Length: 128
Ligand code: HEM
Image (tube, rainbow, N blue to C red; front, side, top):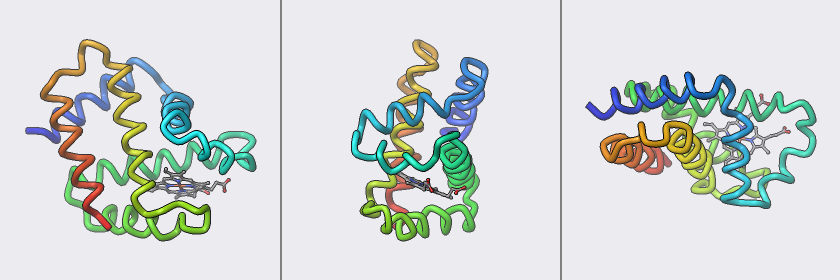
């Protein structure tokens, strides 16, 4: 089942790297360099850490069909409008998470894992 593949990849990425936050944000800023400036006030990385945790919980929630986590994704698309983000921009965070974990797993990232993540990202993108 694809949820199991995703959970397994999360577990293995956690073993490879205890704190993936710097890697995820580095990837996000590679994907969209102008986002880096939005976090200048976050001098200790606290907001970035907390936001990433929210994103992980949302991602796990979608896997578990949690309606409340779907609402969190949906509302984040609106709540970030103040930072000049379009709703669809928020998907880049989940792309950055997937890309980071793909790198961390190296050859352990199989074509099946890739397909499972593509399905999850598409499901998240469909939450408007
Ligand atoms: C491209 C993707 C995203 C960008 C560029 C972005 C940007 C930001 C920025 C600039 C802040 C405020 C930083 C500050 O106050 O210093 C923030 C806070 C926050 N974001 Fe995002 N965000 C993204 C994706 C998401 C997603 C997908 C979620 C939820 C699923 C989310 C949830 C939150 C939450 C909960 C906070 C408040 C964190 C706190 O203050 O503890 N963000 N985001």
